[in-house]
Image (cartoon, rainbow, N blue to C red):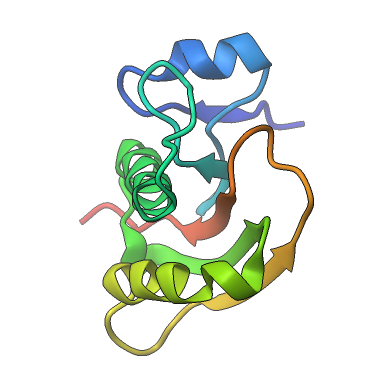
Length: 132
């Protein structure tokens, strides 16, 4: 049995330790990234929604980077929204910045009622590039 290979972005492991989970798990050439939210360095939510969404993407980028990946390596996205209809335009703008060209990853968006004080969360699966 393989042991889980945990990945943490620089400077944020304490937040994951407090809540008892890993930012991402590497399994073979796949990276399974836990849901990323628009949390500030202290773990509190960014109150302005557009900034919260961008911070969630920034936090996701940091996890990907720690594993040697980028947005280009993402194959599967799941996002969670507390008010999908009202949030759609802001999320689509962030999505367009993160994935500016085809082929886009597949994406599932889910409306939820609770995200622990946040309004948006994004989790992904990425393929880890082979070392050159």
